Image 1: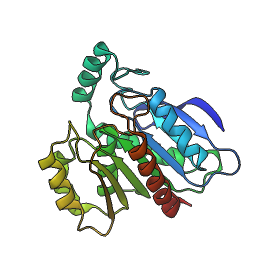
Image 2 (image 1 turned 90 degrees about the horizontal axis):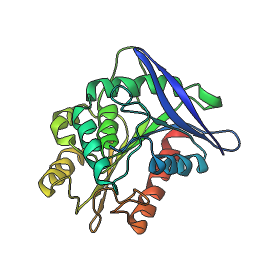
Image 3 (image 1 turned 180 degrees about the vertical axis):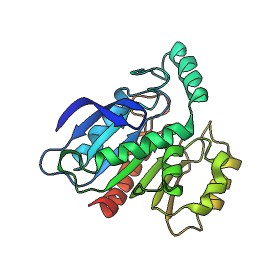
Image 4 (image 1 turned 60 degrees about the vertical axis):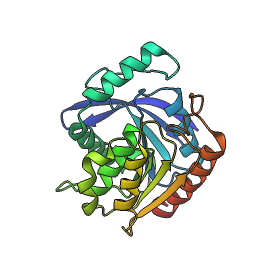
Length: 237
């Protein structure tokens, strides 16, 4: 595996990113969309997981307009305050546009096959939902996406009617940041769609896949990763 820091050209600027490239000829590409903690060790770990499975994986610096290169941890109280400040100031519309531009960039990157999927965590989970619901004129849609414990999806739940790309959701049923009523709403509104595959984790808390994080749970993280890789291979190989 080769890893590097790169710059992704966007329609209104340039965004930093971390990329992991598998040994041998890659299949498709995956955008690993970060939580609220920036492109940190957790996100680099995720990138390596997907590269080891044969995908080019790029982690975009989603907060590049606010504070480029920020790296935070849920174990540092000062970092927690800063992460939430960045989170609540984040512009989802600009973020979605940046992910569309990132898709364009990845379709021809390092000999990939032209297919691009996304895997998002927390904030990134909502971005995956939006990518599967929206179409930008003149731009190809995401090929598929996986949302881990997406936050504030309910604020855009009306867009579920436009869901038209394969979407897998991993829902933590003891999520401290996504109330049970919200989880029930998401499942109720999305499960009828033929494009949706939902997996529920009865004993898991938010961020159960954040290795090294306060709520990491290896059994659930391993199960979710296996399901995600199978889903990505089905749609990106």
